Image (cartoon, rainbow over all chains, first blue to last red; front, side, top):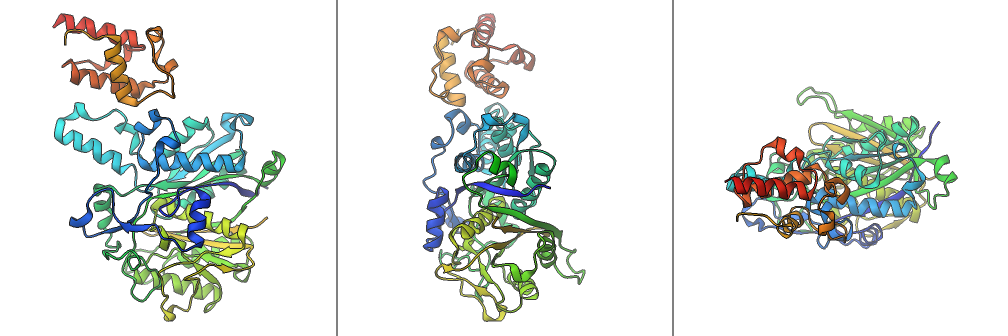
Length: 403
Length: 84
């Protein structure tokens, strides 16, 4: 029986380019949202995003890899270096087949892809770079990390929109149970080229507000959509006994429970699947709702989705029955990188015994949620529930627990 | 342009995939297989694609597969430029 634990955490986020910078900014309520800076957004309906300004890929990978990868993969280079250093893993102590890379992806390498497609239209097929054949694929990040770090075990990529970042942790648990010794998991996305942004508009869920502090306010009576962001988190996941045997310096917590559900088709009259995902994840962890100390909510910022999530939470925990946090109000929604970043927040909350705030949101009292809003809250924390939903009906829930 | 020199190729290689982890390619590497100096098959494809544009050459895929070292590239390009 394996106990899957996180021993290393790496982060690239709009409000902090490494783990501790991001976590301190998060506790301080410093937002990374602002007017889009990579291109002039004035002719687009969406003005605000969470961009990882100041990230220099050359600090994290050789130029050769930088020129053949999209930003989504470059964020993963940085976060993986940080996570492996944090876990004090020496890959040479493992055989290559004992280590795996399993990441989530949703946006693909759209900035790289847009650039090469523009060359195709402007100058013809010969002008398109050879790396177009891999750089914008969903699996590019897993592949590049696998090659770079010599991790050739059961690698994979999961694409379940914004829920995939939890689904990969379940896959990491599965391969650890089958004998893999170490998994680099989580996810990073970068969706903010003009083409990438236009692709996202079709859902109708993006915020078109121009004020960074009012653009993404989940559970607020004025909620009007979400803000897209870029970055994510990479986690090193190992079996607890293995981690202890090799002398891992920190055990952040256990991936104690997981479940995924799929929403019924629209108009079926059946309830959405988020509550069932949470219940099944708690059951998988052998935990009752009253043992949960904090919930990191999906917090979509879309009124009907906020209502559905609030109903699921009050059904499970009672009215204001558990503290709820949505630190992604400071980063925007990072697609496949969002849920791993929430898991990182949950693990650091367990480490520091503090719940991060959900700045800018003034929750609708009708939702009856105990949302931690303006400033962090000290609390005794042992078990956290992380929820994620993806467009198209994906729901996932993970329980993390101190060991 | 009627021929390609080692320096011409080096400039294209560098433009295609950037500097190689601090190591500069020298003429001593001319016959070294691309894979041994850090260029994978996609990098060679990229180099061939740049050569086709800059030297107005048509390089068939089978010829690219034979280009296993900088020397093989230079020899192929010069032979075909001379034939034009």
